Length: 187
Image 1 (cartoon, rainbow, N blue to C red):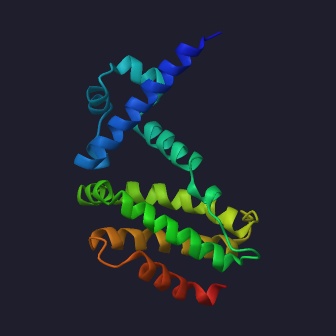
Image 2: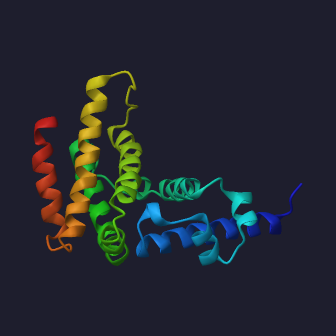
């Protein structure tokens, strides 16, 4: 049985590898990053890397899991008797504020050709949160539900990319109002 210090050490090593991966994403495209690069940046050897992850995609997945675990959606305050539309507006406002707070990193990701990384993170992130906002599960067999959900989630992710590419020139409330107006026909 592992002791507490062993768990802490493993956790710190994983975080170090994830942090190295994120730092590299600021500098080079995802497809150019190698396990060797991640190990060198984290200051660990390949054996240590493979004790924690199978490949660089596994590091990406773990990072996504951490993001989802700390999702801000659970801490949002909605008005009493809020509709789905009300909740979505609060959510989007907070989401775009979070993007703005990390704008330098996000600009680097996009400038280095890591748009797919951004879309993958936020699309999965949104899809899970979207289910929470709707307060119901999305039936995997309901084609219409899946298409509409994917449309909304993809639209939000791509609006975020547009905002990043345009140097955050449009204020958060304007971006959210435009998105909400475009979604009116769905609600």
